[in-house]
Length: 129
Image 1 (cartoon, rainbow, N blue to C red):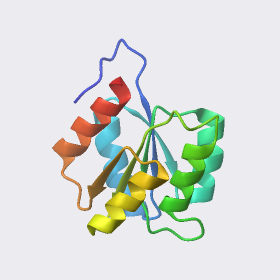
Image 2 (image 1 turned 90 degrees about the horizontal axis):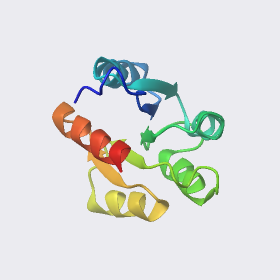
Image 3 (image 1 turned 45 degrees about the vertical axis):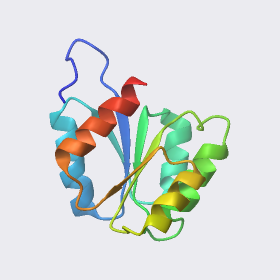
C-alpha cells in the first residue's frame, strides 16, 4: 500500500499506550509512505487531533486515563474533528466491544494482533474516501 511519493502523504495518528505497538505499527505505516503522529493516551490524542487534523486515527481502547471509547466519542461529537475517521484497534474481540466502538463513532474495528495487509487495506480505503 505505498502512497505516491509525489502526492502529499496522508497523516495518520496512532493512539496507543504501548511503546512497542506504536513502534511496530508506526514503522509499518511510515514504510508505506504515511506521515505518522503518535499519542500515548486519549487526552493527548484529542489535543493533537484538534491541532493537526490528521486524515485518519488508529485508536487503541485500553489506555490509562481516557480510554479509546471515550476519546472516539469526543472526537466524533466535536465539530472540528467529527470528519476524521477512526479505526479502533484492540485485543478486545467481543462483538459487544465492536458494536460499542461503532456507537462511539468508529468507522472500523480491528483485533490485535492486526494483520498488516488488512490494516493497509483499511487505511487506504478510509484515507481515500
